[in-house]
Length: 122
Image (tube, rainbow, N blue to C red; front, top):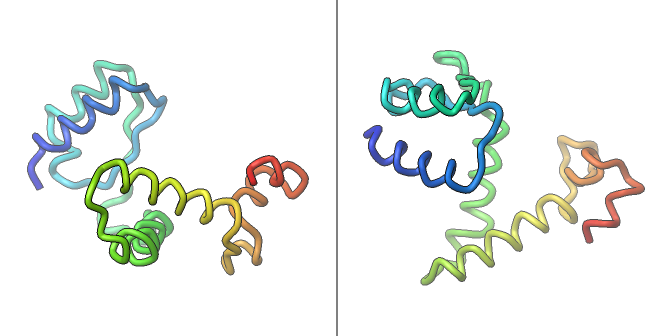
């Protein structure tokens, strides 16, 4: 749980784009002065999940679990290119084709864009 790795990742991400808000949990790497100062210097609002509030990020944790077990672990990628392709294909399927019980058996694209626009993403 070292901050240095997260700081390097944040700097690389900010070289590609700058969000208005950055959300994390309250891990020591994300609450460190070095990490938060980078966000503050870029005028990025800092949002943190409540301490001890596992339910705050339950949906994203479920997404990462699905990605790992449904895609990453079964393909054992050997190159970054293969991983990008496989994960990109997985998210396309997850968002545009896979029906989600928690979304009343609709896709995330149908919920987000509405049923009429969803066909643009297929």
